[in-house]
Image 1 (cartoon, rainbow, N blue to C red):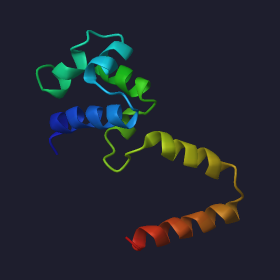
Image 2: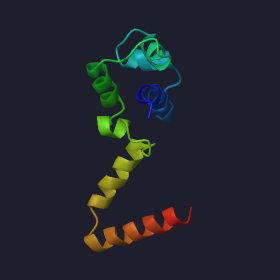
Image 3: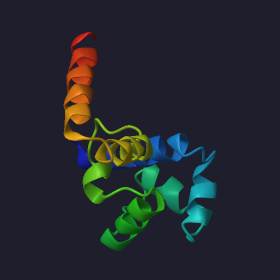
Image 4: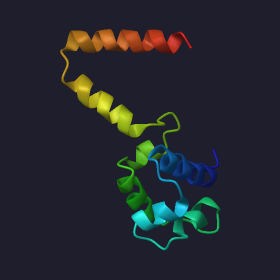
Length: 106
């Protein structure tokens, strides 16, 4: 996997999912120069580790979630987990069966 290319694309994906219309707006909301995100997504600049953590914090995801290509809506997944955690074990088992059935139907 080309992690730099993925990193740049993932920032764009998360930005759009959060309803942020432009790279400039995201840069401003991160407290950076308004060209900061554009420079990262275009490959002109790489984000440092501290900036990467700031980006993860902004999107309310962990670094692991950032690099998980199957996790397209982390807020929705977290909401589902919070709801599931309150259920009794038997209901959780039923949800797992349902999820597996839905995944196999694709």
